[in-house]
Image (cartoon, rainbow, N blue to C red; front, side, top):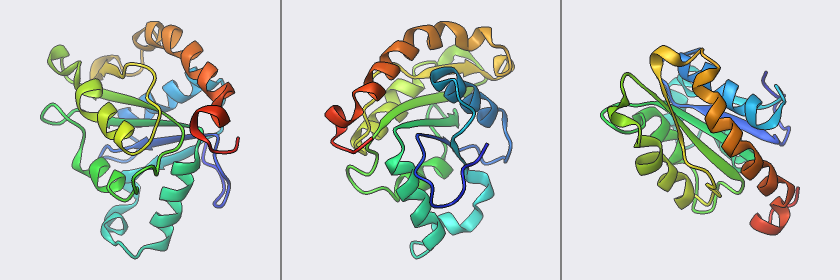
Length: 179
C-alpha cells in the first residue's frame, strides 16, 4: 500500500529491481510487514520512475528522497547483479546527502543461488550506513525460487524483529530525529 504524497512515512520500502512489480518488491513488502505488522508504508518501486531518477532537477524525486530519508524504517531491496545491488538502486541512493537516511535501514537482496548470500552485508549494508542509517541487523538474502515462501523469511524475521522494534521504540534517542 502506498501512502499519499506529503505524508511522512513510518516505514518505506525501496526496491531497485529494473522490472516493476517484481519478486524483489514482493520480498520487500513481506519484510516490511514482518518487521512492523503493518501494510501501511511508502512504496518506492524505482522501475516505475524511469528517467526522472536521472534528472537532478526533478522535484518529485527530490520529494521522494526527502520522504524516504524521514522514514523511521527503510527496507531497501535489490536483486543481486554481479554480486552487488543494481545500478538503478545506486542512482536513487546517490541522490541522498550524507546523513540523508535518518532511520533504521534493512538491506534485502534476492539471488539465483547461495554464492552471493553475503551481498546484502558486504555491499548494500555499508552504503546504507554511509548515508546515515542505523543498520542493526544482518541483511537478508533470499533465493529467487523461495521469494514467496514464508519459511525463507521466518528465521531472519524472528531474530531481526526484536532488534528493529527496540530501536524504533528508542528512535529519537538514537537518531536525533523526532518520532
